[in-house]
Length: 189
Image (cartoon, rainbow, N blue to C red; front, side, top):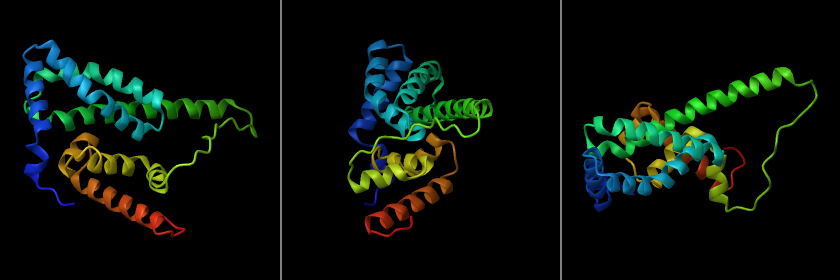
């Protein structure tokens, strides 16, 4: 479905978000709490898409709210709140993943050869589309979800994920191609 830039920025939800951001910047605590209620679950979903771990996602978002609260007074454009908040969460996820990878490297150095303590996810029956989305690389999955589920524009996603808009377009193209292949029954993705 084609979306115009005005569709992205002028909906009632965007207007409410803008009001809440401006009010929160002025020190209105109930407005800040309402903003957090509106975005908390969405930010957790975004962090989960990036990390693949719900507990890590919750921890990342909790710490991200501290950054959001500290940075909110300096946010110049209230309409940029959504992509700005996603960007904060994306960066926190990247830091958490780097820390986790460092821990894994250390663990692999310390464990004896031949031991395999990798926990495999349990087999769960899911619809083909959900399984196909979950099989995408995290960067593609995040771009796809922000575009289709969170209704962000390519430019907003680029800000949220801290990459160029061209990279977002490429990730969306590859994600769509992979999903199409799975849904059409091709063996290669």
